[in-house]
Image 1 (tube, one colour):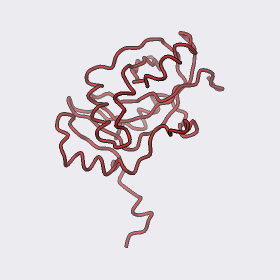
Image 2 (cartoon, helix red, strand yellow; image 1 turned 45 degrees about the horizontal axis):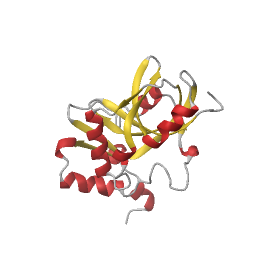
Image 3 (cartoon, helix red, strand yellow; image 1 turned 135 degrees about the vertical axis):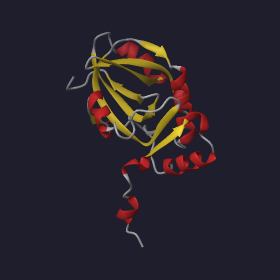
Length: 188
């Protein structure tokens, strides 16, 4: 009989599913659902767990996850992470918001279907916020409920802390979703 530690030890890619968004049929959905049951939600109903988010920069996040969650994908291919790595970055508020792109809507819809604890992910994310870091632009889907508070509390050009979750990749784009922000971080 395997020990508890052996049962918990998995290959590096056990928490990542490679699926074609258009071909997500029952065998893949069952695998995805089975892996997803062992994962907790990003935000607890009782409150936000700020301590669960590790300080990083986007280039550091991309480097750390370049072989799994954020690796290059083929056109139409998506990677869904069942783990949901949590990070907090300090960035500058750009005030630039746009509706989700069609491919991001499809990605979030399939992600919501594949993870039993994230069924409403599509409803929570309708817009993307521009994050500029190290000379690169990153569009980060933001929870709709946060946008009015961001517009009220943040001024264009203000440094603030953004809480992100890595949920996978699509069309060679690593997908982060914004789950919270802090207008006045101590170390901005």
